[in-house]
Image (cartoon, rainbow, N blue to C red; front, side, top):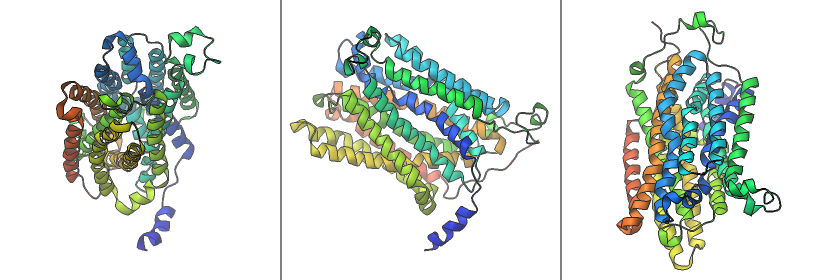
Length: 459
């Protein structure tokens, strides 16, 4: 009863949010999960069609995992520089450059006909894109302690939306020459480039986001006198060095965020591979369209939950309890993979298999709340208001590294387990459960009460 009585008071004291500016940021943010997730339904089939695998289905995991990781590998090399640059020249120019990079990458990926071209195309997206860290900084600058949970809860919703729409676009629009013969079958182009259409659709979204940000987004980096990017007063602000930004609390927050992101990306990379491979090879033998629908369903339900349930759950349980629960869900989620394959080995995918898949989906929805909490921890760990960009840059660099390692590590270990028949081909799941336990131990270092961010820190 105490909670219900206090809630109206908390709401009445909440600072009003600039809704249109937040909408633009969320629209721009959606470009990244779309470009990241659109390739998942067809990447394994695409790699399998290339001569690099020699027709060996067991080797697909190695090459597909590398493609999935490349964006994050190259992003890790530049995202900190983009974030620190945005502290000085402003957030908006960096966002526009990132959207340009994503557009160029998707067009190039759709037109690639060799494994080397796929590698170059995917690398471009990471090198030219530092948007995630910059958007988090802008979100922090548009909010305060009264509405930070409301703002940060929107970011996983956008990611979940992209994780829903991206795989659906990739699964339904791949190979349009055969899927839609009356429309696309008349053009030889779509037969030559069977995976260009979903890439072009996402590239068009990136161009739209670029134009919206160019004409409507307002700069959030302000000078001492409140004028955006006034060179003279901005020079009075002291920007901390990286050593000064790397405080113990920043290290704690970023480490826990990184472990969560690693496990998430490992799981996301295993899902399409597990769904695509035939049952004797440890998978379920789904078609690309069904893979896209399954992955989209995970994102859809997670987004709906975040949008409607997260705020009251957060107000009741707090940041740490939700984050710990989020990490804990990975243990049963990884354990469900071999159970699904076991249930399908007798008579194919059956009711038991679908119940297990649904349970995994429910656990994933619960897990996804941890990212909102991770964003809040990183923001509160910043040493000063004017080091928020650098703090998010450090966090995003670490996230990019683990997100690069996660897919290639999990899919390669999957293929290695199958080739060597270690633990019946299920060694990968045992390893991932062990890493989940390690991540759970790491949460003990997080504070129950959030750190406070000083308004300024000057010479």
